[in-house]
Image 1 (spheres, rainbow, N blue to C red):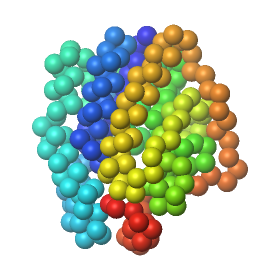
Image 2: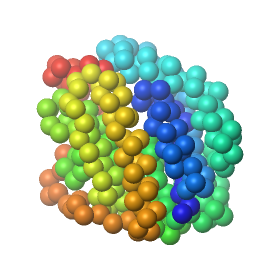
Image 3: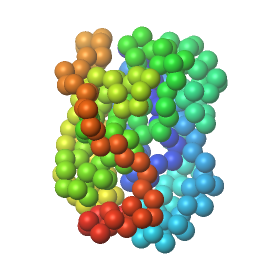
Length: 246
């Protein structure tokens, strides 16, 4: 089985998502054919830090600041080089450079892990089995960005879903989903998610390897899903008023 992992070089997740990423790579090493590292505009992130502090998002701002140096020095790329795993660094998974690289590797599966990219047909058609995404929300009811954050604020179920990717955002059959404790300290919540997510991804990979197929048993159909996006200043204050600690 040839699997390509796709992740961002910089995230707002605790430890820059390294705990999940490295656990998956080490425990599924024999199936990982390569990794696509999506480059985030680091100067853009730096410019946002004062705004985050001003908005009262101290924990997120501090986490991003710590993760910035990790990304700046290419720690994920160094980790992959030490394990002799091929990698490529691009602005988007849809870049021609990435597409040609993926076509050369001829993967069976592409797994998206915390990379905010809308995959185009040229990428979706490359892997034999298809593309899957780790969505940080409970599908089919929670779609969009920061689904878990809004769910925590409203005391609804929060967690993550692994689903097959299609031309439509957060669609495709549901392959796995798991709820996580409702911790209203968002960074602490993300740390709890990481503990479960990394195990779930490794188990998911092993299941795909054994069955050689992407098969879902849960419907991803909801007539009125909650579709969320990155909160603006007003929404941040509403979330904090509901007890969310950012």
